[in-house]
Image 1 (cartoon, helix red, strand yellow):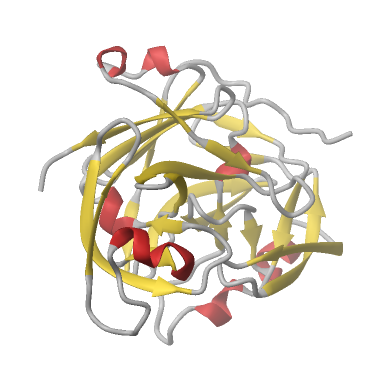
Image 2 (tube, helix red, strand yellow):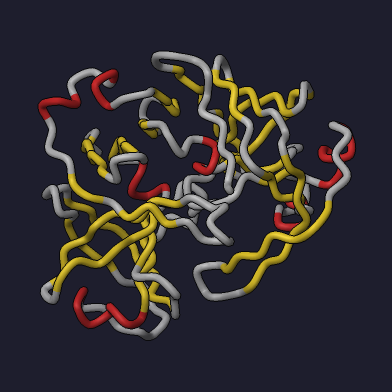
Length: 264
């Protein structure tokens, strides 16, 4: 049976998002050791570098396997039962991946100990706001000010990697039905990503050239921006270009979300 400990803190916790040249980071303490981690809503699994795992006394074992958006398989070792503290939030996920994250970063990048993801908060509601530079984690949507006046919409909670990963897909309108775009703060390309299989529905060419895309979510929130059309294993991806204009609130247990435009 999967064990995911519920954070013991009550009420809201505002976790500061700090911009760096490789993405937005948060501070966390893992098994008593502080570290700097990227926070990636599309990461699926929380991971740490091998050196950090060694420093907290973990001997990695076994294997975790997952796939990228373009179906590339990634295997990594794992550490089980580590205690993660972010601000006042304490959580013990079933496992964290161990992966040499630094080899994905460009030369001269700041030191990063790993990447944390939504698998830490399976029983929580979160608000991700680049405008406020905050990841707000609460027990219930009722704790987020003004949210009761906004309309919600369903989301897909995706549990890949043998059920260990956790990602959120937002509903996007198309002429043929609802498409599902991953909410991915780790996509800092500046592009909205659309799968080739949906290119025609968004009036896009599958050739590599500069294009714009416009669309809307089921709750009416509109998005527009530069786009890259790729051979994806999912419908699409809304990254930082989307999050710069919108706050996103997701009630993970109830599979619903609110998207709140913050203006240009």
